[in-house]
Amino acid sequence: MTDFEPRRIVLIIQDEGERELYNQILRARQDIVLESYGRIEEFQKGPGERRFFGFIVDLRTVIRSTNEEKRVFMNISSVFPVLRIRKGEGAAPLTGLVAGQIVTGDGIFDFFIDEACSGFQPRGLRTSERRPAILNVLATFDPDRQAQEPCRANIINISDRGFFIACTHDVDVGRQASVVINEFINKAPILSVIKWGIRWGQSTRHLPGFGAEIVHITQEQSDELAAFG
Image 1 (cartoon, rainbow, N blue to C red):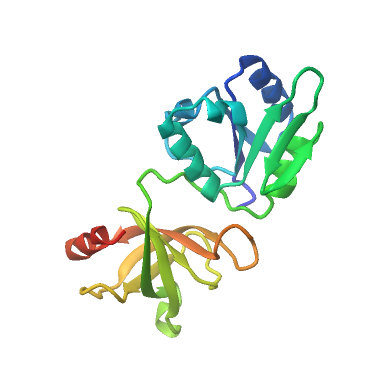
Image 2 (cartoon, rainbow, N blue to C red):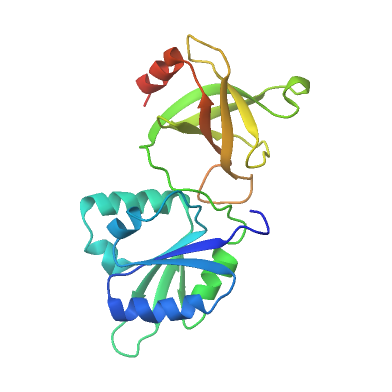
């Protein structure tokens, strides 16, 4: 994350009164950009491509959501830091769950943003369906592609627009990756650009590696990719 990239937080809660209260608390922070919605479906209709830092989602809103909204929520939860919140009855404090840890009290949002989201690189939300697949790959990275030994790694999921490669190689967002898939008949390098990454030791919920968007692929390779997963 660069020094100039806003920390975009999404709040999703159906109760209008509670949503307005949490909006006021979160907008008091000058270091975040807040998006606030009543339903997951409303968030999906939001403007353009954005990169997100974390999600704060009311559990009752998820319970009342449609099956498609629940699928989107599960997709969000598998990638982003998520604070699941629930307001108790009466004067009971707000309670949240993040990464298996229960948090309560007035500082719940600050803890989530400053601690739970610490080290996470903002990224966009996938628009094409992800499919599990295990493929062996050799990857090299610009600008030193010619001088380096290929990184032996594995694709663990794919979509029509990209893939996630599990590896311990530290690669910066924005670099190009040239990927040769061992299982393909056509072994020409597939050119991609790294959109986000998880460094080794950064997470206990996800494998280290990086998500890449395909920049150039032949039609034959695209057909082969569609055959997996």
